[in-house]
Image 1 (cartoon, rainbow, N blue to C red):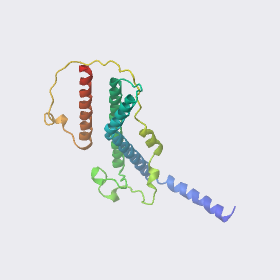
Image 2: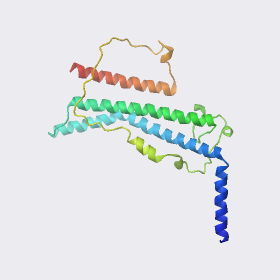
Image 3: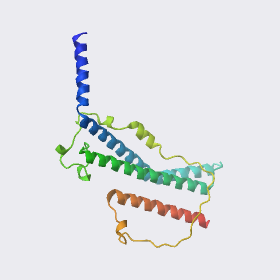
Image 4: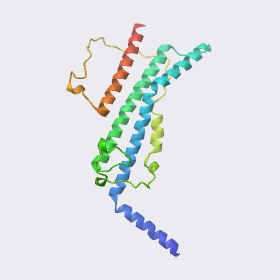
Length: 215
């Protein structure tokens, strides 16, 4: 065995030994990778949710052009139902992404790991010396699970429904409550944003359902 081969063999053993002796560093890298992946997942789902109206407008224009060309299309009711279903899927995906990101962030905070480039005021350790920091020389792109992100980009299934199922709607009277009417309705930051998005979606859904019922 040559000196070079012997050196490389010893170097590999030393490298393996150093990894085995430093489980905290390995755990920190895993937590940072999970954080970045969940952060990207949240970004993708937020973009899909925020851009849904533009998407719906494009689909409406395409449908109108198809009708003007004399081609057959589904009913307007089926078209509206498809968009409502997509909105529900997007809302659910957004909530799941927010919860997954919050869990990844909490795990890093609990372990005392500070993610490079993160906002320390949002819950991470205040002093960089209090937690583990990955070297800036590390390739941050390796910290992201690209396969998972690509899968999430296709998380909204396409609904091609020509028939709208019957929906039972209960008749009930209720009054709107102000945000200060109950402490249980007060929220901040992510929770406030989540509630606002749900309210906007519910308001839009209720309005369209009323149009369907009246017609």
